[in-house]
Length: 276
Image (tube, rainbow, N blue to C red; front, side, top):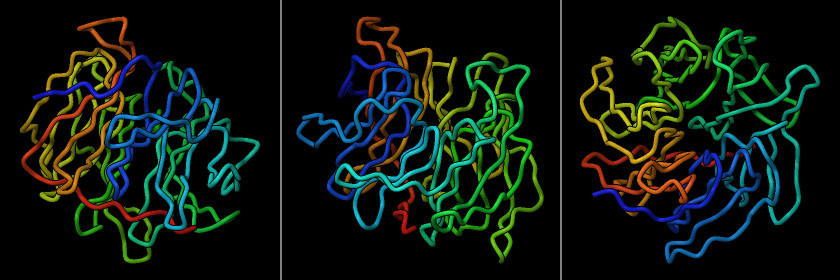
């Protein structure tokens, strides 16, 4: 069963759920980061900021968000964690088991799939402490680790595939390969990993969310009444609620960007809050 829990937005991104089941999300095109309480009330956490493609909860409270820079916002105060003049913006981000931030850089317009300037994946361990893990990412999107932390999954929307690296003991990335490639006109966007090590990915242009096994085999599909499915995350007390966000609604176009919720059999992995 697919439930609509909020609508009327532009391009929604970055969903994250905290321990109290509050859902945080951003509106990339219209601006703003918002919080939906379990009762349905929606409040503004960060007003007006556009281009927020990634959100992480912070251990000290507040959120880490992307955009023109990567920053920690708490109680209306902004602390910049990473910004470079030669990088126009940053998209999706995630945390590792140590609470460090992994974030993908955007060096050209993410809405143009061709003629891209490739970006990189960066690991942030503190203010002004950034390490480039690898490059050659056409359009960076969803990021997630396997349950044991030994593998990193990363949506690259330009070539329409999910790339996979082994994570070495020192945190470096090795043995790059493709987990799964999507059909023409289907673009992998945000992703999340469950306790079985399977990768759920939002399919922009495909009207669905797909689940891939660790071997790269598609084994589940959730149809969404939207063409532009942008991201997803797990929530709920047992992490079996799957939240899926979009930039449109084909069932009722007036609803525009919509947040859906459904339930899945396998819980999502717990996500470590950012600590930097």
